[in-house]
Image 1 (tube, each protein chain N blue to C red):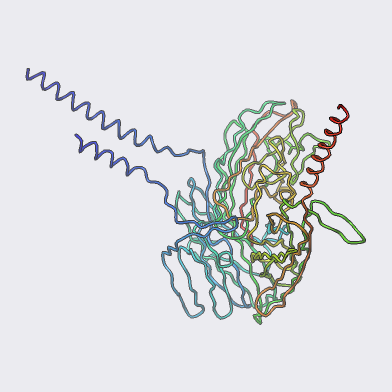
Image 2: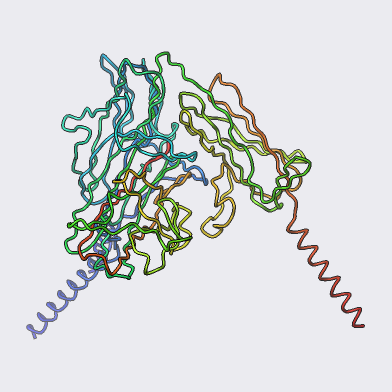
Length: 240
Length: 345
């Protein structure tokens, strides 16, 4: 019996596999990680070119050949943390939208970035929230007058008679104009050739930098009933 | 009697089985993962490519796009970009333009084609970068983008559908001779003072002794090719104390400016101190410590071997203003109290 219990406990312990990390050496600006675990490397050549590479490239290098010089990675710093971008929930469901009532839904943006240099996440919408019959919900201007927001400047949006669609951002590396949870911006409309707005950015090394986006809608009593949809494009790019 | 013993054995066996089942189920319950709705998580490597190339040459670079989220469909494309501001942010253009040619050498994929990625699956993209013979010398900047498809619409409810795009920047310098045009200058090197005082045409930049000193340095690239500044910032005090801060090498694109970063820099918790000046404006370096007197800050930069050194300097004065004011208030209050006591006596 004892043997069986011990056996079961040992078996159970094998189910839980903790995450294993390499040793990190870090300061506010740098993170150096050990060690370099290449899967393959070497020099490949043919008549026209010669290329040195490191598959599963953990240490970037400087590759010379007649006619070109290639540097891959950030000024020869390369990390085992790849540039990774995550959206935790891609369907932002507002549920039934009632006039003069704020409807909100949330998702998280997560960026992991292990090299020197900075990153940015930008956002835009592929047109306004639109119903199949062609009716649209306008983009928010927030409370209006002195509290009129724009694609790049967040302002308070608390008035139930201020109608539209907008977003708020809070968390790591969020744009600084989202001063508190009442501050919102409209998405830039790519169908009107408006450039995407920067929503997250950081000049430092980071892992799992997480910001929460709150999408909010408020419609007037005159808004035509229907199912309104749009696509929001979040673009994560490293710096140069 | 024999029947009772048999029942007892059966009961023990049942209890053992139940105990074992309970232990195994418990073990599974200990490890609870976070569950989200449909999740997108993609990575791209390498995140930056820096090429110096002659006209008429082409190279092949292997990229890897990996899916860490739910299964998704990804499309690859290359678009040009321009610098958006002096903080290293970029603006990707809507349409492809420029003389550099990009193709995928994959047997079954072309740029613009979609491919399916299962969870933890990856796709290698063999990007061929071709520079035609007639391309003029200069810099050309592009991003290789991997874009996911938005999820299907929800029937009956209004919703937004999120789409993720991840990019990797490609900096191409075309040079027939192998030489590049390096022409950089320091556009701004200054501190962001707490107080400014104009005396006899000179501006004094004042800080309290305990203040953090934000330093801003912007380097301008007036040349036709990107530059990579190297150098340091040196702080010298009244009493001969000196501190050195290394400049982080970051590309400055042709005909643009960039705020340069230096290290080691102090950090500030901007979540809690969001009204601090250093939180409102991007800075190159934050100096921290107890400062007293006049300090001279200087920077020396170069853009690689054989390029001349560029020099810029500024200064600031730090005095214990808060301490002096507090002391004055305490002394004044003490004098007032003593006078009042004397008057009462």
